[in-house]
Length: 248
Image (cartoon, rainbow, N blue to C red; front, side, top):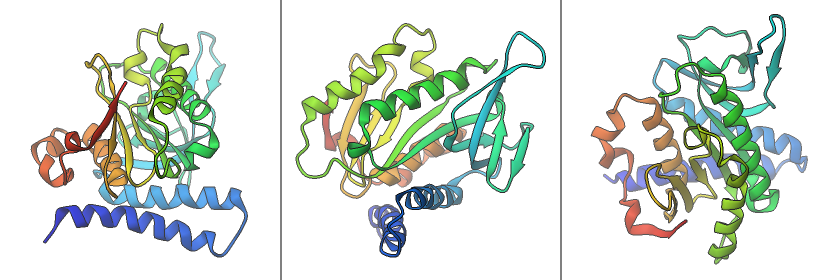
């Protein structure tokens, strides 16, 4: 029996399923949508019953009755089933900010698709949603999930600089620490987590085939009522601090 091997199988399954489609088609748009669907279906297995996951938009009201603002389309939205839903057709949803507990941008290769641009957009999505929430003490998951990229010996200095640059436009916002991107899987091995109270809040870990599992476990931890924390040796099969490579 091995919890480490169990969690590594999540990474292997995600990569195997997406590679199956890549071997059959060369249409990158459809390949990207399939990656979203694969990740969504895997996350569904772990979600508490009170939550659902879909794709779509978040809209919020303005000061003028009959007018509203809309977010960009968000790859994956985790929402509370106890909240009302404006529109739902299959997994496509349109929600108000109060319903949303987490968002995820899904990328085939974050390194190729532009770290700074993707992070900036994800921060903008988080800011848009969080600004529309009345109750702002509730934990909010803002994640980026990349299936590939940053393999071999990528430059940690350049990575840290580009990552930090994506946060600069949001530093002055009072809610910045609550809505900013807080979890990133660069690939199945590299994982970034934000620790809110640290002087250098971003920690970059090299987790052999466990990055995807850590990403999902942190999402469930955000949603759960301390269950993951009480059973953290089960949800986190290795001590990530032993694999810390950079703080910035």
